[in-house]
Image 1 (tube, helix red, strand yellow):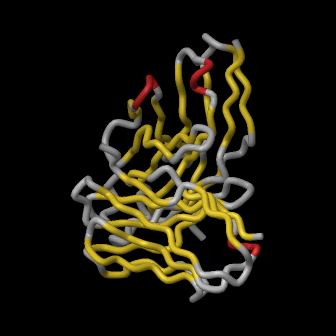
Image 2: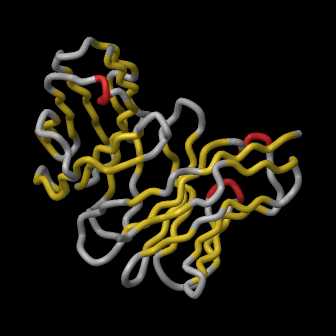
Amino acid sequence: AQSVAQPEDQVNVAEGNPLTVKCTYSVSGNPYLFWYVQYPNRGLQFLLKYITGDNLVKGSYGFEAEFNKSQTSFHLKKPSALVSDSALYFCAVRPPPGNTGKLIFGQGTTLQVKP
Amino acid sequence: DTAVSQTPKYLVTQMGNDKSIKCEQNLGHDTMYWYKQDSKKFLKIMFSYNNKELIINETVPNRFSPKSPDKAHLNLHINSLELGDSAVYFCASSHQASHTDTQYFGPGTRLTVL
């Protein structure tokens, strides 16, 4: 079965420190991977995606993610966390083949950045 | 200039009622989606329409009926509401249904069934 796992329910970091939110996936074929962020009582906002090419993808608000095919991972990173980064983060995969556009989401990781 | 909008934002209703949630996108996209987010924040796709044609129906009870009057609109009608339907429903759209296209989400509709 095709799936996405975010092994941490919550990640706590101090402001100014680097942050990592983990994501691993299980799909057959080449995966297309996405990160979204959800602020309280808001919709999901797109951060970045990996389709092909460079394994390091840069996205919005200073976030980046590294695609690692051998470890089937797509961890989200930021060099210096801000309190305003505190939110719920979702990793998602769009499994090939087919053009249905279906996204499979991980269970979400709450990021708490403390001053 | 909201890209993907949903109405209403909050919906509180009694079991057994019928209700609708509306979604509109002004991005010129061809594909629209409905997702359900449960109380544990888990997100799952329900439906997808491409050019007004249904392309995904994820084993959703037939009490849920999406309707796409045109490419810019995808409404969700729910009959005989049940307690378990309480959730946040998100509409999304993308340029095409291609696996490389980014989906853009609306603000969500919080449905509470009493």
